[in-house]
Image 1 (cartoon, rainbow, N blue to C red):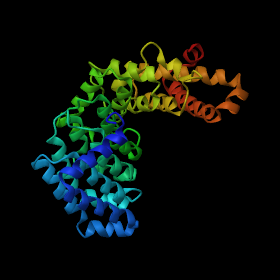
Image 2: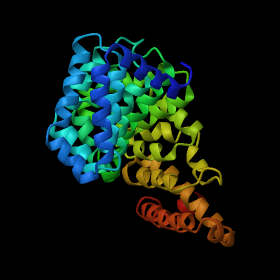
Image 3: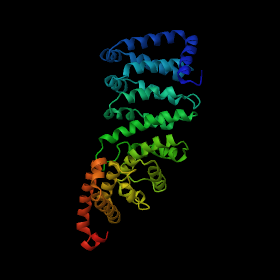
Length: 349
């Protein structure tokens, strides 16, 4: 039974009901009340102080040895209140001290006590917040809390880092070309960024590496990667074909040499690799790069453009967006050629 998460969670509640039946009964009644209410009524429950009662239960759990079933039931109530209810989520985070109390509780646990379901609070709130409001969880210190937790269960840590990554990645949707991630400065100054980077370097599980890389790639948007780990990170992105993340890194010229190492610009047009994100990489290098890298990329774009003219039906049928983007990049690159290279050099490129 304990190996099955659902059965384990039910067993936790059942065990707690024998030890503290009054609290379990109280929380189950609250859960049923929240379940029966519509979204507007659930918001009213929060305004009337429901979250204060739940915060008190969390505070009790932090101060003394309270059975896990209490915490699990509190999480169920939070789920009922926030499911498909962004207004309730924002109110829980902004207008109550619930997240603060819960973070204190998490920090009081030893690594053997941290379970997958402890993260449901953050997952529930994150999943039901629109991307533009994910920063509310960052402002509460959720990312730092997750990064600083000591996990015994590796599968458990995987789930928590998914939460962290989703909060970080959400901000990228609002950033313009060349803008750095708004969390970069604070996470760098408080040591969180270093811990994420070190976790990636030390991690052997590829699934977790991918999630950590999503966080790192987003945080290092338009910023220079650390010199000692630059090749490791970009080699991983190449292997995983994570061109969207590489396109974030390409917005900083300090990363270009490593991105283009071993004539990698030629591979941006391979059938298995070509996509809009690889075109963004080319665009960023032409826009921000030094003279040498601009020439390398412009030459690659020019070569692919003339090659595409020999097989236009294939491009127009299978990747018309790619074809016309290559045309655009060629024109952009050709302007560079016209202003920096003579005609003979262009013809021989």
